[in-house]
Image (cartoon, rainbow, N blue to C red; front, side):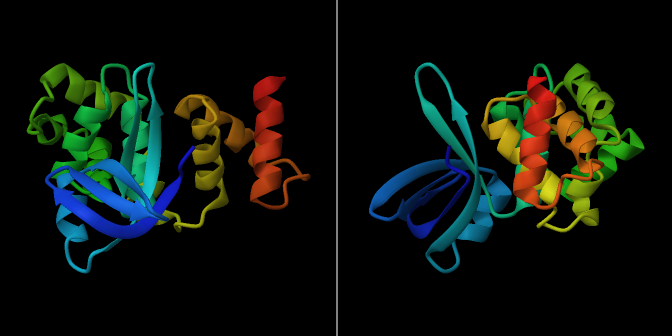
Length: 190
């Protein structure tokens, strides 16, 4: 799985970018907010969510880990796919999304094109209390966030991965990120 891409911008279109990384051009879907920020110097570094489907491998890129985390939490909700998650994050930052969720401000989320009342309510209900660190309360190098991301890339759901990592964090054998992932995997497979 691709976790991060860094390279030269070859093409920049609203919602998609083409990044040349090591002589290979990667087409990456991104939010409009991210797209606007990328056009300045011709170089891009994006955190990647890889979506493997039967008919395609689709890359979704984000300039920071908090936006990637918010995207992965959004797509873990039933009825919220990558297109809607990108639309939500195009209209608000991860911090603004966390604020709207914690306040129960589903009308703010509903203003996103393609998001109806039921979907906005579901987002608020399922993400309440789960976006606190996305808004910036935990540093980018939080090993728990990295471990959850690694487990999601291995095919576990966001919810399963978060539960396993939270359970593994308190074990004395966990020393570093690798140890945290190993312990979480043991919890998931036992």
